[in-house]
Length: 354
Image (cartoon, rainbow, N blue to C red):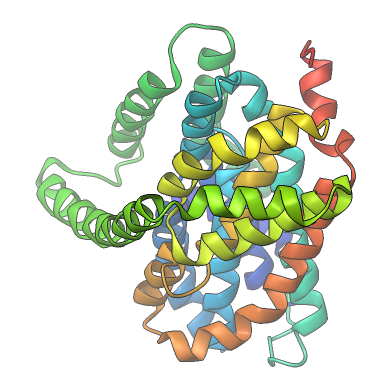
């Protein structure tokens, strides 16, 4: 599925200068919307794009940075695992959260593409355009079954046919069947695929275990409540309070995995946000956007570690190249916070009432 989505992404972004970098971003946005996982996107898309970029003499470290920075877009573009968790903790409608994530997720991806334009010459990105050899009709036809997965999942969840959790099982079965239909999979391949899945998952689970231990330590020391008291007592100005909450979430995201961060800080910050007039759906997108940036940063950035392991780069090479992209992502976050209509327009069109 990833190969066909990358071919489709080449059709969309292949004529841009530094095309393979843009293709990486577009492919992550599409594949992330299928998997709902930044780590899965970093591994699948990065595993295919890295050899291709190496062949065309793209700078290895910056290419890895682009893959790492763009893979979290799938955590905002639905279906998203972390938005499901936020919906459970906050008792917010997962359907409207999913719909609300489209524009912020696309804006995050576009901010990375802007970074490619701005930094291309500095990091010696080849400016030639990559034109795919296959006909546009064939590329689109090949990609349609993969893209249908989004319609099946979103249509089923929004239509009430199945829950978000059940949708994940349906997605796995659909992808498995599609792999055999595409003739990319054989029965003999399944043991190695399962082993690869276990190895990738074990890396993620190890990072989650480490961050969970830190979460327990923070909760035991009553640090979350101390942070909430500090935010509320520091200023009565709503703008200052919102800025402080975002600053705290950005810092928390660098030390804690997304799942424990959502579980700990949603009950603390959501009442404050509602008190300030922020809709729970809008706050959920703000929270996840902050944590998306955090999973790309050391010391607990799961997407960063997986992206580096796929490309063979070390952290010291990639992190400096990530810094300008972080700045653009934070700037985009500021736009999302300042203009709630960007998040709430689609949910309101779908009938959401705050």
